[in-house]
Figure 1 (cartoon, rainbow, N blue to C red):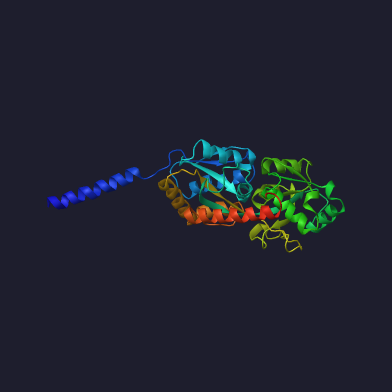
Figure 2 (cartoon, rainbow, N blue to C red):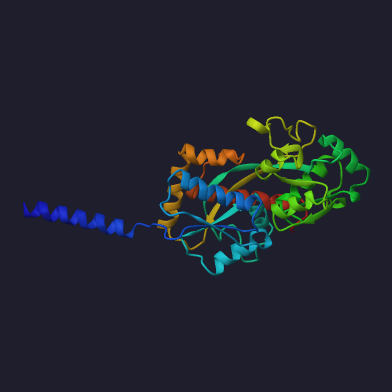
Length: 325
């Protein structure tokens, strides 16, 4: 009897010790590495709102902004200041991965300096112009651009070599125009680029589908093409793809989150598990779909490996484009 009680006490003690050491977030936050507005802001809002609606975390997740270098400042901050902080998730996109592939986050920082933990979904490029612009189809726009590419100013939330630049360059290349002849203005984020479009400072914005919802509904912009492999479903099904209009211009954008490189396995696995819970929740999926993202459910080590393979692929593309040696 005493032996049985002792065994129960031992098991109870082990369980109590395990529970006491189990990671629980204290002040969880999502860092959007840009100013408010645009894709990074959207990505963090999906996390904070989606987890709240799905009842994933007991503590509300704050959203903070850390603009600079289209993600470089945040990446350097995490690595130099809080590499082991388990409460800070940072939003990333394919643009972040492209910058990493080109060494734009620092010579000593690459895809191995983060723990890629979860995804929000995928988005697609969208070619947008002002609502009062004279073009109603992508062909009309391209025909005008071909006459004199130097008269057309394109702009987006990223410099030369960024994914937004890549979207514009891919469109130009597929149209038979030398991308080097296009005039491109870089902005810190999608919000600034959209303001420039509406203000008439740029004529074409190669942005993202997830950013255009409110602008389309308010009648401020026209969407000439979506850079998806095939037409989207639902309310965006009326917009033709660039591909179906005869242009080999496709750009898929992955959106997700990473943790610092020294975050413990315990904390990393905790967050990976929370994402798996979220992926099974209709409430979380609704938040994703409401932002016109296609669900992309990958987390933990599977995602970490996928991202590293993806960056290696992008590094190869950048070399082919002459962006890096």
